[in-house]
Length: 512
Image (tube, rainbow, N blue to C red; front, side, top):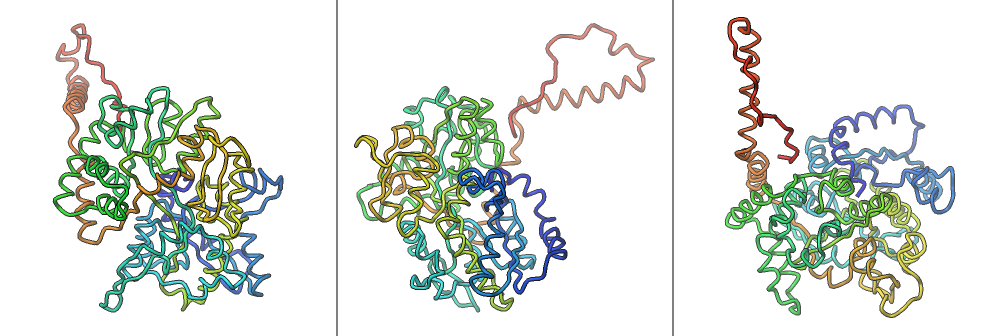
């Protein structure tokens, strides 16, 4: 995801962005409605070179999609709107801004954060009219993938409001935007696919990949991966023909009791000792440079890495563990108070505009991630075939790739084996059997969050290994000796003897 590709930069600037946005607004032309949108950096088509309109349609003056929305809204509803678009680097950054009282109308958090915001009564449901397909401007409900719509409709969250608990579906509170899986980007020159299939999540602790594999530098994704590693045998033993298969798999991937947390903590420490390091932003570059051979990645980042590697003559691949993995999604939610601010209509219209197939193409192309939009007539299938060149309209039966599970119609491509099993098409649209073994991450309640965050802090701050301590001691000793010599050098011959070999200090490359 471009949003996560630059997360480290965005996180550093996140506290300044609301102020910068406000300053920019001061010099802007007045509008009837000011819509404040808070989302990931580089998570919307910004126009110019690199945009769909510029690269595919040849528009050398391709405007940002925000400009087009503002023009469309005024033309459609007769009301002028200006979008103040601010960005965050992590879900937690965004959450902290909301808790601190900063007002936004529309947010784009990830799955578990959507649940957390809803459970704490910080967001409000969409209007019932938003889901009426007979309304011409309701592009979301008419174009969203049936698969995504089903995931949202079947997911539930308990909302505490006025000391009363209510159960609501995700679909009431969120409209999908982008989605994907997590898995391993790997270099087939160094990693045998059959070996990776045999190891699965155990790749994190395999001696074959010591210092050649990375994990994510956030507690939610890496805790999920550690659950997969800890309980891989149990996951593999599940009956996939059972109607409860995915339900049970999801339960395992969301275990948070103290008993499970203790086991996962041991796994995290074992992972840390074997991996090159925890990263958010550098995994793709390290894959291309050859520093690492395996990178635990979001599928959108995987596609980006595969594309970038091709430009350097390197063919990377993407793998989802057989035991199961993560189905993630980001969605648009309305903040509490949006009705009082008079911006709810514009916010819902914004979501609908981004859900037009043409808008979905623009955003998906610019970001490199997979839109939740399928289109009433599977318009996004044409985008995959013709614009991204993932397949042909016709081909041999052995190249048939069924996408009906996502588009809800007889949708398919004809693609070569690599695209169907390990390349970009597989990363963006895995086959149905892969999706059956993917689970959505739930949010941590307050007590669980505190306990697991303490565990994560312990893992990240684990004492350096013996070799690192030895190097540190030598460095400290050297500094002390230097100070002593600088002060008393004329009186002692401490450094006049020929130095012994073997005490060269080296930079520790492995991330701690």
